[in-house]
Length: 248
Length: 296
Ligand SMILES: Nc1ncnc2c1ncn2[C@@H]1O[C@H](COP(=O)(O)OP(=O)(O)OP(=O)(O)O)[C@@H](O)[C@H]1O
Ligand SMILES: [Mg+2]
Image (tube, rainbow over all chains, first blue to last red; front, side, top):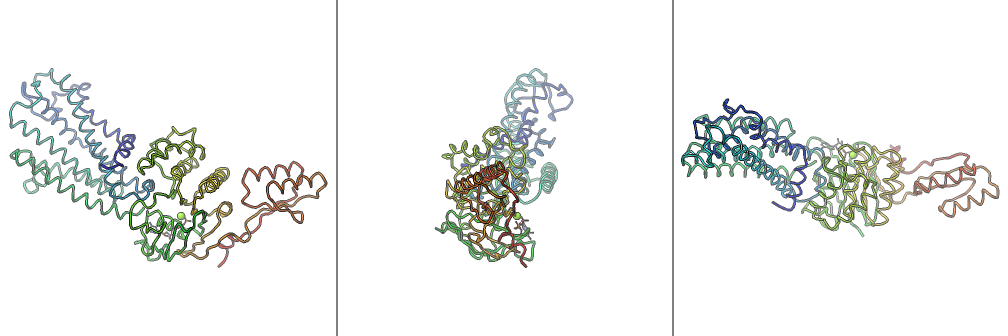
């Protein structure tokens, strides 16, 4: 956060790309309208009286990730924040403010938008769960899962999706400083696919934070955060280097 | 007082095997209004982008108030820049200015927003988004952003391109007013030599990346002469009055109108002459700047 972050955030919140992206957080509310929940809409096996709120929320988050659209919308937003501003000369507005400061403000505002998205998803999941899901036979009506091991699994799932999203957004930002929107979007989607497939492959399972959801909770959450920090730091350092040298 | 010192400034793009700008050396004093002229591809935009730090020099240095601009950040604090007409198209005109003041930590200039927008004639549309503006309105939006912080130094790349004649005259009037009010220095690149002549006191001519010539105060400024029909007592009086109030010259049946005359004054002068049916013919003089392009 620096003094540019809030103006940048306010500016971004007025973009239609941001609004569209944030609209995906209302996705759980769809369940109010479309009643096909029992047709395996959420990919959570749900026996009677089993589905607590947090499990529902992690199911929502996983589905958002799997349908890929929200993340593609985020990557497109990244393109408008970096490449579009560079190629259209909008960066002239910033004159010679320290480039690292500009980069930090842009990334900061982007991640705040992601947290807003996360918060809105949480909120709309709460509304959906307590006004609609709770009436279904498979709902437990409890906030937390039944068992401790279920709780740990659900928490790891939620954190891992968050971390993977942050990694992909950092990657997209790095690409967008250097390349056009086509390259950024294609490589960004490739990265999304890789991150979804990797946990199922023995050799590269532990490359991404979501490979650890079935590991021992106490170590898994730390390892997840550490490897994500490492990836993001490396990408940040490269982004900063390129952004500093950028000519337009 | 020297504000800007450019020393042996050169730029070669990686993709090219030639220098887009080579060994440019010049200074700009406080209050100077420098016209930057040269053919397409001569290196004008390259020079201006180097001055705004959008490009980094291959060699050479740029000092503003004795500070090397490429050594630290925020040296261009006192610059108003319009290299391309840029703004955020999805923010209203007012929000654009507000955003600009915010990121540069210059909220104290918020009170200038109204006067600046009135100056560029956008006050009425301040709540609109520039996305759907006409070209001239977009240009003026960018200009308002460049002017709102009362910069000491203004850089404009081809500000007249795409403007209709009225827009061009308005822009010239705005810049003139601004330079008189604030003693601002400016570098303005343009192909519209007549327009430049009406505001600039100096010229830098670039050709193929080299500064070929620097001219201060054109010896023979561009001017218009109006050849008049024969005068009688009444019309002589009218003419004398015109010569006195607009500081014109009259000799050998010719009324000499300098290019520096404002648009409004010019209209008034011509109107008064026309009312007396005095105009026989109008001539435009060849001028020094245009000759630069014809030589060699
Ligand atoms: N980003 C770039 N990469 C490679 N070459 C460039 C780049 N920008 C400009 N050039 C080259 O540098 C030279 C000078 O270009 P510049 O844009 O400065 O000319 P100019 O005087 O502004 O021309 P114009 O009157 O057409 O605007 C040209 O040969 C141009 O092709
Ligand atoms: Mg140019």
